[in-house]
Image (cartoon, rainbow, N blue to C red):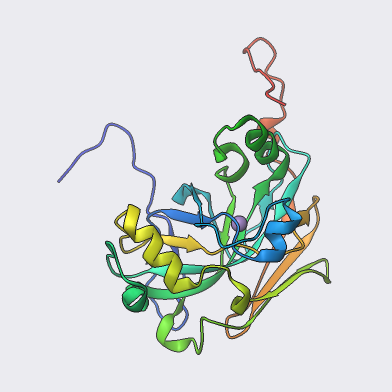
Amino acid sequence: MIEYVISPEPQVSLAVIGERRRFPVRRIFCVGRNYAAHAREMGQDPDREPPFFFTKPASSIVPEGVDIPYPPQTAEFHFEAELVIAIGQEAIACSVAHARDCIYGVAIGNDLTRRDLQSKAKDKGQPWDWGKGFDHSAVCGPIHPVATVADLSRGRIELQLNGQVKQEGDLADLIWSVDEVISIISQSMALRPGDLIYTGTPAGVGPMQVGDVVQISIDGLGAIEHTIVAPDARFQSTNEGSGTISIS
Ligand code: MN
């Protein structure tokens, strides 16, 4: 038995619909811009340029129903409703035709973003991690085993903020389909069981405040809901004398 000098963090996992057993999360990949209307609202040409990716740590997962503390160092905390793919089998240089075999299931996700930090990073040509891969930044609902899902090529995706529709789109409008995204990632990285892929968000992204309730639904997958709560006070204490430096 391996002994550790510190206690390892527990395995991050998600509930699976109709299953007692859970889905262990390994890595989180996200597609940068994958709906034309959202690419346009971010000031980009939605032509079918090769997709690009960023990642979040597995530790950023927030399961359904868990409150989300407003994150530090941002005044633009944005929602991004997305379809999430859960990988169940290794995929290395996988063809589009075989991509479906690698999928364990799908879920509803919210790719939470510190938009101001992301914009600043874009302007300076710096990495996106601070805008994208922060604590509590990857909301993911329960996994629906793929055999129980009728169709991954179409279906309405909608986000409501406090009961008001903010984002709506259709999976049919993905610039790069679920199968294509898996195939493309697998040319560069060995996808392994437990990896998640956030497939991109439709137009209408916008800010959230403390107290907001966010609901996301996708046809065939039901809906998930979460609430934004007060920031973790430990980030706000000035810690006089400890040398805290503001980066904003
Ligand atoms: Mn996104």
